Image 1 (cartoon, rainbow, N blue to C red):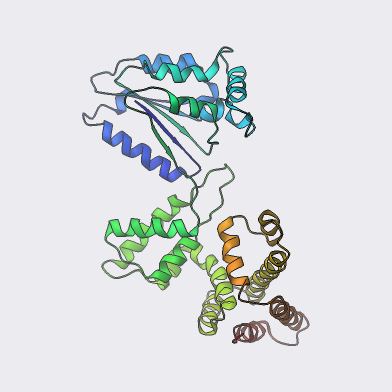
Image 2 (image 1 turned 45 degrees about the vertical axis):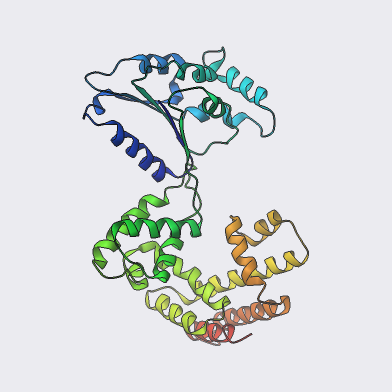
Length: 354
């Protein structure tokens, strides 16, 4: 059996692996018959030799190889260059010097039926030559291939809702939104996305705290450290939505939690700057890539959200509000108005009907 789990989402990959292991370990002997290999110092012979071994007093031998798809040369392959060039690249970079790792696709069709070979990788291209060859290999049963990519805020909310439903825990819609938005959507320094690890721990903590009651927005603010940081963006959202009551309430919460008024002012200023850029470039029909770069957003989802809000305002309205923010900043720096009062007045004015 061949299983391939790849993608930036390290938590979901781990869960898929754990689920397959549990499914195979019906006799309790899988740990004894498991070998984990790192592809960095690996040859095809090393892999086949381990896979050919018969399990000891168990039904299955599990061979778990990490990083092989990337090692096989996929990251050196230019998109659209053709399958033959991709295979040639993989072949010349393989340590065997012959057909390289592509020969693994032929081997899995004759692998012992008691062997389960798992290939785990972080994010790789769909055009990866080894991945394509393994998917096309005639094996029985067919290979299990699953991809686990990063989630945006909307997908995170769906994931959270299902996770909480499985635990029998209810959550307020606003709390669900806040919890999802507190998680980073960008990968870590290692190129992988680890957000669901901390989010799972937060779910456990919130579930125990809430008990049989519904998880509230206040619960998330109290128990999830990252949620307070995300409240900065909630403040900007409420201000640009013109929701004065909620914007002032969030502002007071952040001030009470110790966030400095100039930081809150800068958050609101940055949001209006982004809206100005998006509105202006959209009217000029600039390419989406240029709008993303100049507005400072990283994902299409974030850009779509900004475009949706920017359409509510004219360019002149956005410019007038941005100048009002600049005036508030000047009043604080010159000592004309104390910083808390200046920010409270600013939020009140920006959220008036427009």
